[in-house]
Length: 509
Image 1 (cartoon, one colour):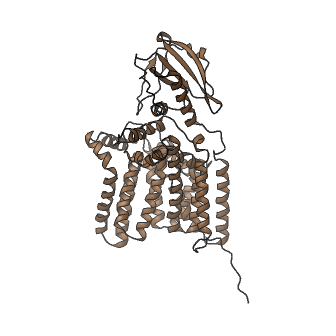
Image 2: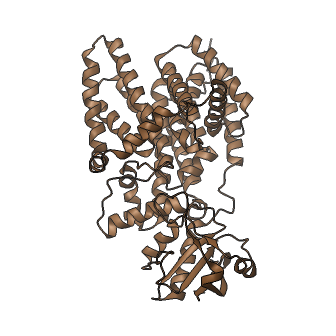
Image 3: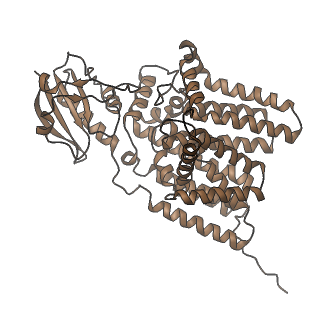
């Protein structure tokens, strides 16, 4: 009697099987979604301009930064972000190349997620969760933008991958690498200090598993070597500034949540959980998020593994830590949690043994991917920030020649004008400080398609000035428009045959 051939959807394990082809397709899809029309779709505003100014000074003036960007509360981060994206600037000399480099790092995150999940949960769950990550609209969008919080998911996934590698084979070099990754994460955003606690918990767990308590001290030494090596430039900077940033951010952590009630904290935790899981499942509602969290708790009871405990602790501690914070929690504050739902999904998928369950899971993931692709922005008009800012800066410099000038913005999406200052510097221009009396011509830039009429603008007695500093202060001066300036002319800003804004030129009275 002939044996029946059983068809399995489990990926093959030959030298180059279906799983290998699957991850190649996923990586190509991730690359296409992040790179296609990148110069049109990427955001280029004040924060990106600030970064480009630092890169310009590194390459053209030899100024190596020892501190990084500032947080909203004014503390400096570490400079590793600048070092990390410098290759993109060296290859291109402009923001498009840097955006491309950042996008490729996002693709790398997709691949490392696949490798990490495949080690502990198998290839099929790894393919499914990496496919979800590759096409998630919010992740694709942020992976194009030159901004330090957007690189947090890459290093969070790398952190998890190193832990998984260390679990299977103890290595002192991996511990050093874990410390270095923690050092990078802390420099990208301060809430990432949670990874130090996670590493301590995992080291303690390894000691219990191996029954070698000396391992804790060896791990701490290796971790410290890697951490201090990566943090050295920033620690040098902090030493010369009396550790003002580190002490200030420590104060923020210590006093967070002191005036918040438990009910309010729990509501925040629910909201933040919904936002994190929503990166994987776009459009998910808060009640569904609660059901998924409850479902994970039930699943955890029946599948109480060290990895499931790690994902649970990572998620719960991270969410509750952010829920204690009194200030506004923006989505990028939660980026250190972004990989966790994908690892959780991998665990759940790996637990499905019946073929019909696995087939249903594949169908469900394909459905979610289809929904995600429908929400992708690759066919949207895009902001064309880079083209618009470049065209505006070139237009002003062509008109002004060598004469001194200054400028400010109105109706802008940006909180600062540093993206224009970058292009002025790259093109050889140097705006005079707007508060100076040494210039005769003032340009007011409206970089939207719906700009006010010149008559409306000239009726204003004062014009507020947007932020022009690396870290924006609470107040900025106003320009006494009616008393000190007279309107000269207005002209449209053109980019690739389209009107993308309006320039208003004033002369000093």
